[in-house]
Length: 285
View 1: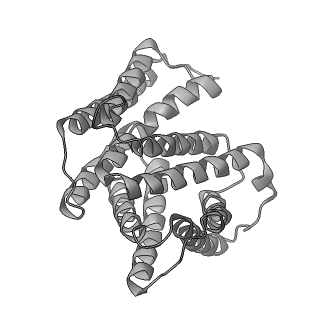
View 2: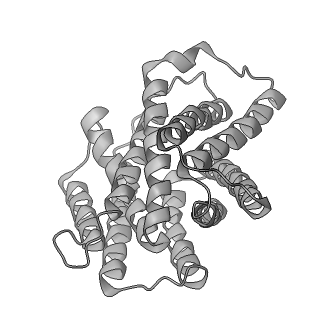
View 3: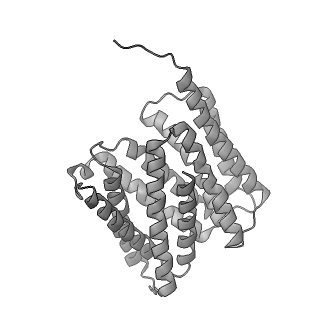
């Protein structure tokens, strides 16, 4: 999980760097194409179908829409706002997943976990500072991206079990291609991709696939309640990269909001583990 979060942070850094010279639509399309081809190769090696009839199911279509929303708006966020602040807002994704699981899947979420979710959202408000003189409207892009990623995670839980993670990876990356091309056609911006930009995009694709694979292995082989809190080390990597690579300045509001979000998320995970452990065991004959 730590390796996955490190790879995600490197991917964000490379995308932020290349997006300064390459239009966002082109970045999205190339990133989607590269990731799709790699997952197609991995799927082929596992002797699985590249195109499965289940891709037309409602959860998969919803997952594709949420994937595009999350990727597009988060790329815009890290392009137009500091990487550290966008990554801090992204850490609220597990809190939105908890709320969504209760609302859409009927999962039991107690009063304390709801309080933790609300406190986490307060942390997000502290980071974006609505109504304050330092409020940056572009930070709302990170909020929309975070909601998109949460929707993707929820839709993944409802996805048909016949689809493997590799197949989901193909369809998730594929949908970025037409979206990015449509965005580029709409903006009509000039595209200039030099050797440096090509290298940055290639690196972002490679690290993105590594991150996805490591995340999948961590969640499938480890105790989720133990592994999941390590998602938050992504924030440490992002803050370090933002300060060292992009010379970003950290203020007290962002640090305070980040601490609140992380503590709230960790509490929901730990409290859920306690709740499961305290449930009475049943004997089956």
